[in-house]
Length: 166
Image 1 (cartoon, rainbow, N blue to C red):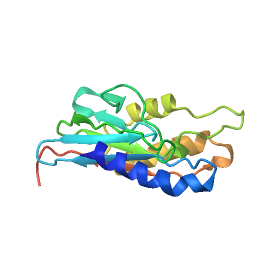
Image 2: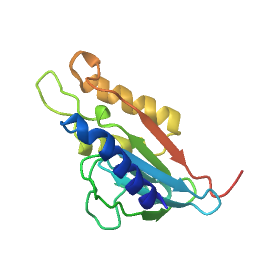
Image 3: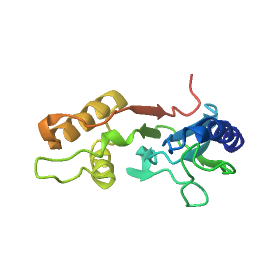
Image 4: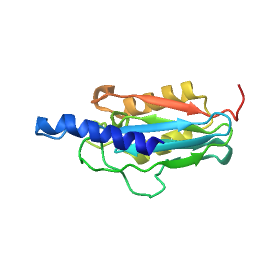
């Protein structure tokens, strides 16, 4: 149960971070997937919403909690309870997880590359294999950014569902 696990993790982290006196922002997206049927159970603790690439439908959308409300980052609230949500991937679907360093970059004109821009770029490259898509997304954001560089850490992880094939 991802929600129960993250709730317990939060309580432990809160007890460690409380003595520090100043809040430390720790986000997490925890997922447990069943590769035989595409069932994905997850919890999002303040992390950027992953994108659900629904290739058969030619659609990209953020992965939302079933409550439609964000859950807090870890270690901020002692008694936070994290709820498990679930989605079911279709064959060829992909989940794209990433850190906020991927889209919170500034242009030379001090514009910010937004989540909406990242979603549109992902839609544009939806049919590409994951490795090529990642390269194209990184290049697009770097071309937008001041000095063609990222200001923060960048991590992307893709989880593709093959439809229960081995």
